[in-house]
Amino acid sequence: MAVILLPSLLAREAGGEGRFEIDAPTVRDALRELPVRDLLFDERGDLRPLVNVYVNSVQADDLEAPLEPETEIRLVAAVAGG
Amino acid sequence: MGAAVLVGTRKGLFVLTSDETRRSWSVEGPHLTGWEVFHAMRDPRTGAVHAATNNWVYGATAHRSGDLGETWERAEGIGLPEESGLTWEKSWHVEPGHADEPETLWLGGTPGALFRSGDGGSSWEPVQSVIEHPTREKWNPGAGGLCCHSIQVDPSDPQRLYIAISAAGAFRSDDGGESWAPKNTGVAADFFPDDNFPEVGQCVHKLLVHPAKPERLWQQNHCGVYRSDDRGDTWERLEGNGLPSGFGFPIALDPADPDAAFVVPEEGAENRVTPDGRLGVYRTRDGGASWELLENGLPQQAWQSVMREGMSFDRLDPVGIYLGTQSGSVWVSPDAGGEWIEAAAYLPTVLSVEAAEWP
Image (cartoon, rainbow over all chains, first blue to last red; front, side):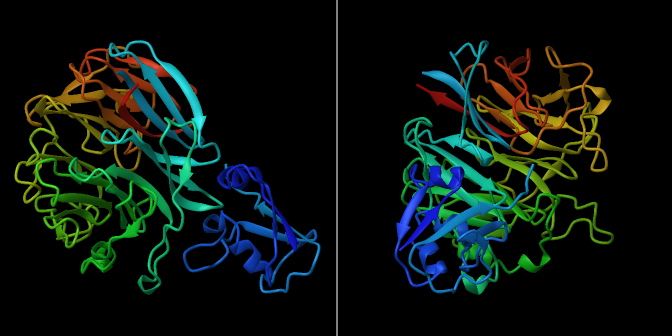
């Protein structure tokens, strides 16, 4: 079971929920369960380049990594924009 | 029923409301915070508000509100088919379908793509005939990307549609979007070194169908202002006779007068700012044969830019004209351009304005 924490814009798009508990085989699978998956991944299934995924406070470079119990996944938008 | 103008900005959606005199305005918002609202409209058939929304991190989508902006639903999973090799980049314009098809809507954007919704905007399907158009390899992106920014439905025939893409040109469908014919005869592409009148590749900035005389089309182009009286088969360039420049982005019409149009010229492609150091709207009432400057109430020391979706008109009498500037002002003329009132100032950069009826 992983806990996924969303930034405020994604939480609004998820119906006001900023915290999800999801059981899934991999980090990617867990993210694909979110109601905002279309905002995280494009239509090819590729993670959008300015979406950063932190697993237990470490930036994830492999979304196929198995999801360990008690994992915290935090989604962070890249520092960008204007 | 009151008047409203939906103002899409770089930082969300604002709604300006007034009574039908359109002289005193209230500002509500922002809605959709965090989203760039390239265009928003209130569907006159259903009352729902639809917005073409983009975020630099989370991509392009569309939002819908059935309660005048209190709550919003996002359309999920808008995307282009894998075999196209294209990905959906920006939502530019959302347009109601024909009055006889109240659940049909159209969404255009980058990269030169059109979507159709058959369920009131919950889901969107890409229009294959645009993705696979035989001239696509000749299309080139303008500064705003290869954007499908104009979508018009002929009010007299639900099968007849128009789209315009920068820089691909104008296209007409007579079969409900199954096929599209280029409609650029007589429209210049001065930026090409050899053929200045190609079949496609024109840089249309905005295209409109006159609501009461649908065989008449108008377009503001990178290379001039044009009118067509034969559903886009041929176009006449309307420069000179009072118009200081053929370059500009938006255009507005008067539903009660097919010979009237309103434009906001800019100095030119290399200096995209209103000419003569002031904000001026130019109006024709003779089909583009002559143009007059409208400036009563507009700032006389100003260097402004109005984007392609930054102008709109209402269905009241006399017609109201609306324009929004990149510097965050919304100007309203309640009398067809005779007088201008600053309805809002200090908004974020205005990307679009759209007049609407409001309860």
